[in-house]
Image (cartoon, rainbow, N blue to C red):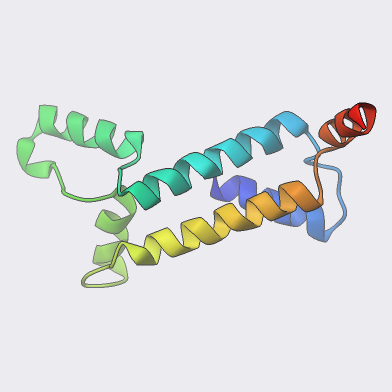
Length: 117
């Protein structure tokens, strides 16, 4: 999701039609909604769940509690990390993505709306 965010920023900043690929932008928007929803509901990413299941199969002592990001960043950046430190930027990214999608929709979607109206 972060890669899509930075690519969209680049395309907007430099007026590139690099990512006016409507499928990518729509998939990115759906992904952002999914990630933001998981964050708000306090659920973990399916990849985190898979990682812990695989760790448990190898060595039950390697299973960690909490999210992937909190587990790894907490050790590097903070002694303890509040989940809101992850949720707020995630929601900000979601709001930004929605605004960009609405203010500068992909050409195919823009053309579809023109045909309807």
